[in-house]
Image (cartoon, rainbow, N blue to C red):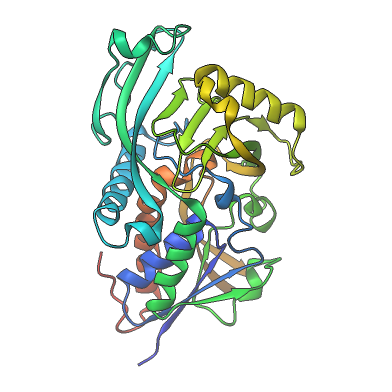
Length: 341
C-alpha cells in the first residue's frame, strides 16, 4: 500500500507541532521535517512560552479563541501527565496590570485560562503606578524542552527530520505529495508574501528562583515570566528590524522596567540576552494552495504568521492545517490515508 509523503518546512514550534499532529492523525503517511535550523537555534527558543493570547486584527476573534482553547486544553492535559517535566510545561499564576482601566475588563480568553478575576485592592498595592489588574493562572512552556519533546514525539510516530535549507518549495515537488509551509519569517522569501514582516524582540534570561508569579504590564511590553530554569524579562517590539545582535541599551531598559515592578530582581544573576524575530502578520495564514509550474502542480498547506502569539495558539492552528492536509489527500485519492480528526 502506497504511503502519502508529507514534508513540513520549518522546525520551530509551528513546524514541529504541525508535523506531530499530522503524524498522530493521519495513518499510512510518512512525515518529514526539513529546516536549516533546529532547537536551540530557532526563533521559538527565544520565546517566553507563556499562554496569553495576542490579538490578530485580521483573524476573527471566535477563531482565535478556538485555537487558544484547543492549545490550552491540550497543554493542560500534558501538564497533568507524567510527561510534564520532560515537555517543560507547568502552570504559573500571576497578574496582568494596567495603568488605566482597559475597555475590555474581560478579554475574550478569560474563560479559557484558570481562575480569572479582577485583582483586589490589597494585591494592587504592590503596583502603585497601576489602577487595575487581572489575576489568573495559565500555562508556560520551557521552549527548548518542549521543542525537543515534540521532535521526539514525531520520531516515535515514524517521522524524520532533515537539516536542509529550502530555497524554493518546488525543490520538494518530486519527492513529496504535499508540502506544509511552516517557515515563519522565511515565508516572505519562499512564498513572496510581503504581508509578513519581522517584529524584533529582545529578552533577558536571569537566575531568580524566588520569583514564582508572573507580572505582565497590560501593554505587553514589560513582563516577568518565571520558568523552570530561569526567569524571562522583556521586552521590546521593533517592527521591520532584522538585526539579531543584542542591544545593551535595550537590555538595561528592560532590566530597569522589570525591576521597577519587582525590585528584588536587582539581585538577579547570570543574565543572558536573547534576540528573535517574530514572524508577524495581521492574520495567521492557515490556508491551502495549489502551485502550478509547467503543467505540474504542487499541493501546499500554509501555517505561519503567528507573531508573538505562537505558543498560545500553536496546537489549534496545527489541527486546522492537518484538516487542510486531509483535504489535499482526498484530492490525491491515496488509499489508507483517511485522517482521524
